[in-house]
Image 1 (cartoon, rainbow, N blue to C red):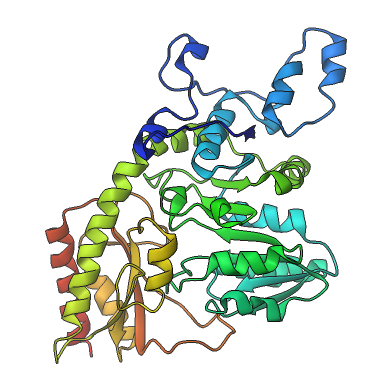
Image 2: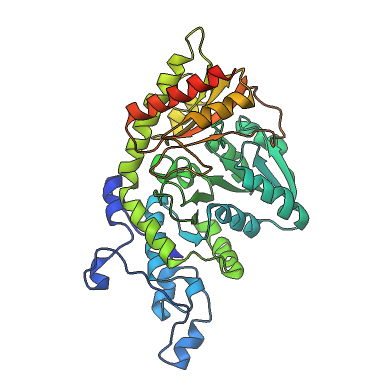
Length: 409
């Protein structure tokens, strides 16, 4: 857990290469060392007593003794937090063991029995499961809303509404939300705003710049980038930082140093990787969009905000500076058997739930958990995670899957 650092006017890849490390503080080593341990020894009783006052501000902590016990942070975890603060423009960042924990900890921080929380209906399913089980059991009333409400979200506010939880684009079907309008409406009545920003990363969308209080990321995805680490990151503005930090301390859900090291290493190349993910994904999405125009094609709508045909394209174009390598498409009038035939025919795309790594993945999307009446997608939805492989090879693999799906129809 650490406070922010100034990034100046450096380019994003320069920031990624140099944020969160000070080689001269560690005898010239380029990467911060991995500090393992639980116990920290104090030079005297007075210092030990002074550190019993927990301060979420790293600078304040360093005036006494910067580290007291591993659950409160270490040089390794602080290095990652400092790098993320530089990207987010946040007052502070916490690290947690998974992307889901990055959702649950801030919700627990700002909600209590009797509160009302608004959550977008296109949210990541494990977020919904947590809300419908743990939050409901706590006595928090959970209400889901359509992603296209914009400023009209205010019509759902109550006196007991405490949190507005967004995810943009929406999980699996990528509906955009007017985050600035929704955030302004919430801020006017003192509602805390949170957003799962995993898809865009702070490279393509900076929630705090748009008035959001809490920015959530599954570092498992693009920051880690190699499908070998689980970690979540939560960044807060100044008004929300102390509450988030103190909840993290009380829960003890701290990120591990080895995982922090892997994510920090992943950050160094995240900008370059995202450029490749985005370039290939855009090319394949446009190719599928063209394929859908063929009279005998089984390809339906392509669900990807950068496409001009996508309903939320104008919001994406206004607020975002880039796009992830994750999108979906519809097997038009398709059946589950056709979707499975598509998946089973693929040779390069792996069948897996995660994304953001170097390898391409695919999954058949389940949408029956949603509660707000919404769009009929006109068939089976398949989600593609576009990795770092060659575009031509991925295109040939998708063609192989489409042929199999068509034959199964």
